Image 1 (cartoon, one colour):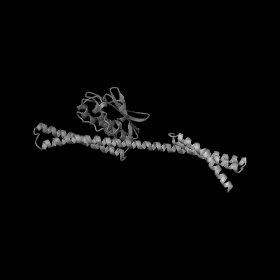
Image 2 (tube, rainbow, N blue to C red):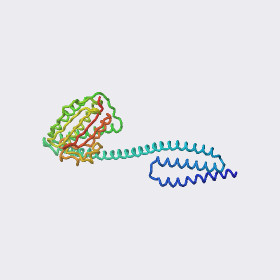
Image 3 (cartoon, helix red, strand yellow):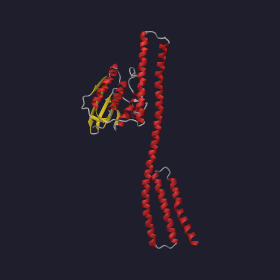
Image 4 (cartoon, rainbow, N blue to C red):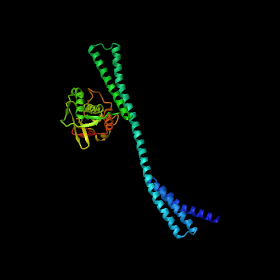
Length: 340
């Protein structure tokens, strides 16, 4: 019984000699990495075991050779434990960083959703109020002049088209964000897509006296879905027309390099402030103050802030990239897509 008590006391004292300074060191290491804390805990555990074994071994008169063997076993165990601890610590640190990034991403998405709801509520409420007022005026016979009646009908149709476009953008954006977008990938000629988009945008550009110019280029063939790529180009052109002043010019270029096929749309918007460039593709971001012209919306109405967000979503769905930069007198949107 005496030996048991002596051994137990020796083990407790040996553990306390290491554990107390270890606890102090652990407290002083607050704010350090997860890997550092795990390694410290492993070192404390191994040293505690080593000191306890040595203390007990001395009391039991274990020979030096056997004590040396115990030390070697503990050293090898310590090296293996520290190696595993460092690996696990880095895994835990990466998981923690991923969790933090995921939470931050969720917060940003939720903030974007709230902002989008606010924007959409405003964009729908304003034209609806105008349409209701005009419809009531027509119904009550307040407006009887044929020219005014025709103008009211035209404005109601314009507002209806605008809201239909907004609803269509919302549907497309919801498909992208929900992962419900299914692409039918095939070989697509960017030249044909650009040609069709220019033909569709020409009436809107002509109304603002804006010149659309497609640089002669050896348009590449890319792997993609033609309807979605057509929407990308159409959104970029509509955005460029919206912010380019009258008598301005918009240039569409394309080509191929070692990274794949590319397409660029360069406008004359006057440039975007550097602090706004990273936010251009965010949902509901419009950056009105970033644009030079004061009256851009005479013909196509204010944007819903969804067009460029849709562009980014569709391009990324094609494993491509889209970026924007300021150039002389305007900005350039560059789309890169996998070439066939």
